[in-house]
Structure formats: structure tokens, C-alpha cells
Amino acid sequence: MDQSAAGGNRDPGDGGGIARVEGGEPTGRVIVVLSNQVQGDPGAIGDAMRSVAGVRDIASSLDYAASGLDVAEASRADATVFPALGVAVLPADAAQLASLDTALAEDPRVLAVEPERVLYVRGEPTGVSLEYVRGFRDGVADLYEKLSGAEDGVVAVAARFADTKEMTWGLQATRADTSTLTGEGIRVAVLDTGFDLEHPDFGGRALTAQSFVADETAQDGHGHGTHCVGTACGPAVPSSTRRYGVASGAEIFVGKVLGTGGSGTDAGILAGIDWAVTNGCRVVSMSLGADVRQVSRAYEMVGRRALAAGSLIVAAAGNNAERSAGNPGFVGIPANSPSIMAVAAVDGDLGIADFSARSNPVRGGQVDIAAPGVTVFSSWPMPRSHHTISGTSMATPHVSGIAALLCQATGATGSALWPEVVQ
Image (cartoon, rainbow, N blue to C red; front, side, top):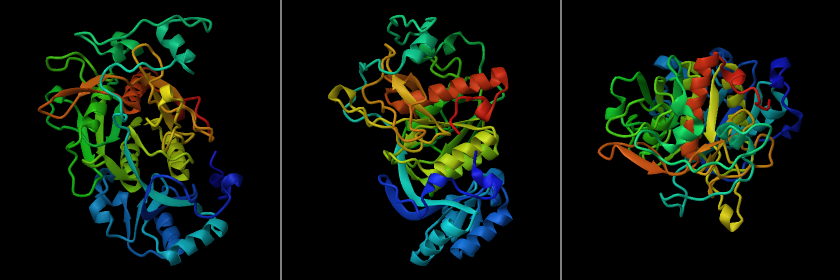
């Protein structure tokens, strides 16, 4: 539980001082995490930021319709605040940093301050071809049991899954192909590089798109986002190809938080999460991150608050492993946050993919679940239409789609949808 709810005290293990997180390209700005005392109260958040950082002009996501922040416009303000998440981003100078450092020690409204970073798509791993990648079977006994029908912990040898004319191997392995659920009535947000808004497979679907990248529309100029949207929420009967989407009836929310080059800042990603949570998206899929071992206090608090609001954030564990060479990698941000579900990738033999990051020993840095992430077929911007790629990015929307099905079936949301969450 966030101790700030009971008097504003920060966790004893915080250590004090502005976090100096290694890894991740810094932008020069900082993220300020505010306590539950002021979270959700725009006036109180504004007072806190004026008091501890001396800012005057504050842009708030609540100033925009449906919390769809205009990041270019907001960047001209002294600070940007996201009331629903209880965080702020600002380009602090030396005097402001000193003031924030003092506030960390003395002001219960301020829980943490850390550098803003650049995050990236969890794209096709370096050196990994689109051909079948054979992985290892460490740490997936539970997954075998669930997917192969084994009982009492006895794991049967899984048959190789492969695409058919009717269905991708990922839908077969997760048994989404046999489910009568579609995710109807459930809003799923995919925060990525956007989406091909004219893709013929998605004609007539309920879809809301918003860009949180300055000077770019929600149209996907990269491809990664369109692929992830397709896996999570692709149609039951796509145009002239096999089915590839899990939650074919879900309402799609596309948040472009990574630009055409495949990268984006924490501010844009936080804007996307704020928008998704405010608009009642029960699942937030993020196939993005950075290879940072330490937990981001900002993403951890955002993950907790999203769960409390009924939104589960699902994130890619990372592709920094080369297991065949003895490098297991590690789960990076934001997936290493205890309140964000970290997804690893398995291949068609249900073996861990060679590139898939192993659990990180930090609290919350464990892999929480695994899903199909090798040679995954899905939608792609026109004129190509469809494409096959690999990565924990491809595993993440499988999990997100299944979470939408579970939400439809049970009505569970937030931490009730993920009761094993470490808080």
C-alpha cells in the first residue's frame, strides 16, 4: 500500500534524494511523483508544484478533451501534470533541483523525483531472423501445465505449434482460438507507435486514436504499433488471411507514445497512460521500455494507481538476452515495476525465446507471465498489410488480449484481474 495515504510518509527504503537511475537516455527533464494526498486534485497538485519547484505556468491533461494532452502545446508550459496519475514532468534548472531535493526530505506531498528518459519499442531482437528461433524451457513449467493440459505438475512434451491457413500459432497455443469470448465491451489501450488507421482488416471497428508525440499524428509510420494492435485486438475474420487477433470484439484505444523512429519520452508515455486510465481502458498494453535495471518509482506508483482505478498495465520484459551465449539478460523498465505485468516470449515449442529477458533480482523485476513471441504474424501498415516479427513486444499483446477476455468473462478489473500482483 502507498504509505502516503496515511500521512504522506514515503517508503522507508527510499533512501532520500533525487534518484540517479543508470541507463536510459536522459532528456534533461525530471518526473515528480506526488503523494496520494494530492493525487487526483488538480488544485492541490498545482499548489504543490508551485511550492516545491516555483513553476507558474502549468499544463494539465485535464485541460484537454478526454485527457488527450497536446504534448507540443504542453511542452511550452513550466510543468505538465497528470492529476489522475499524481505525477508531473518539468525541465528543472539547478535551483529547482535543489528545491525538489529539499522537498523530498521535508514535504510529504513529494514521494520521488527521477530523471525523465527516452524509451523504445521492444522491437525485433538484433541478430534474430524471422525464421523459427529455438529457445530454452527454463522457468515455464506453469505455462506448460496451463497450455498443454498437464495436471498435478506433470508437464507433457508440447507439440510444436505452427500457423495454419485459419489461425496463427499464438492463438492456438493460448487457446484463444477455442474461446467464445471476444472482449466485447472492454476497452483495450495499445500505447506504441500508433496504428494504420486505414487498415482494411479494421473497417467498422470501434477505435479511438490519439497522438502523444509532438508533430506526429496517430498514423503509424513505423509498423510496430499496428502489429501489436493486431495481435491484441485483430478481427475474427480478417481480409484474405488467417486470424491473428485475440480480443476481436474489444474497443480499441490507440495511443501513439513512440514516434516514427520507434522512441518516445516518459512524458509522452505517461500522457498515454493517463489518457487510457481516464477513459476506462481496462487493459493497457505497452510493448516498450529501456534496459534499466533499477525500478522507476514513477512507473511503479503509476502502475499501482492504474490498478486502483481498474486498469491493468501489461509491458514487454525486454529482448536483451542471448541465452544461447550464456547471457540471460534482465527485465528493464517499466516492466520491472511490481505493479506492472512483465511478459516474456516463448516459441512454438513453448520454449523461452533466446532473446527473452530473464527475471531481474530487484523487487518486482520477475517475469510474471510468458506468451507467444517468436515469428508472430499480425497486421502491418499498408500496402504490406501483414507481417511476421519476433520479440517480447509480440508476446505482450497476446497477454493483453487474453486479459480483455478474462475481464469480459468475470467482470474483474485492476488488481482483481491480476490477484498475484506484488504491492
